[in-house]
Structure formats: C-alpha cells, structure tokens
Image (cartoon, rainbow, N blue to C red; front, side, top):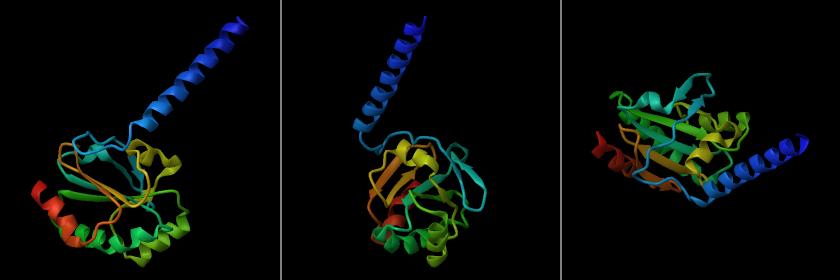
Length: 168
C-alpha cells in the first residue's frame, strides 16, 4: 500500500511538472484569444474580477515601480483613463508586478494614477497572461477577447486612443 502511495505521488508530481513545462512553452497569450479571468485586489482594498466587466473595454497594464520603461507611458495611460472615464464603458486596471507596496504606492502617487491598481500576488495574473516582462498591456474587447497586445511602453496618448476608439 505504501509503495502505491509513493508511486501515485511521483506520477502526480510528474504530471504537475509536465503541465508547467507545456504552459511555459506556449508563449504569450495573443490577439484573438479569450483573456484569462482573474481577480485583482486593489491597493485601496476593492476587488475587480475581469469577467464582471464583460460589455466594457478593459485595458490591463502590467507595470512595476522599478521599471524605467514603464514611467514614460504612465502619464499617457492616466490621461487615457480620464478621457474615457465619463463614458463608463472603458476600464483601466494596473497590475503591479514583483514589487513592494511602498514603492508601488509612491509610483502611483508620483504619476497621479487614479485608475484601480493592485499587486499581482504570487504572480498569478502575470502567469495567466504569460507576460515576459513589464510594461505589457492587453486591451480586451467587450466580449472578453484580447484585441491588442502592447509589448513595451505605448509611445503616446494618441497610440492608446487609436486602439480603443474603434472598439467603442
């Protein structure tokens, strides 16, 4: 009986390792794929579940306070958020990647970011999107489908608007 349990444990471990290897070889999630559902608890304590925002365009931005290339796009993302905020059908979510809360909050304060942001606890969200680094941004349409993947920072507010406007 003991040998069966040991072999069962070994088989289970191999299955888990095999699944992880397959997932790591899949590459990043891309355009046309259904965005993985996730739950983000913001720094202010509110919880956001992606699937709750079907019917809206959702912009998911992965960033970190230590990321120098995240800084140039921070003001543009906030400006886009303010531009669309009165409409109520575009949601911006910031996912803070491998960071500490004090540094993340200082970053949000420095760039006066007002849209919801929260930490990627245990990197669950970034693993689901299979990001390779920061910044990376995923724009998701009203049906939950990824319509744009931005690797690296956006160059301007106009770049962001030119992707979102046709979706509305």
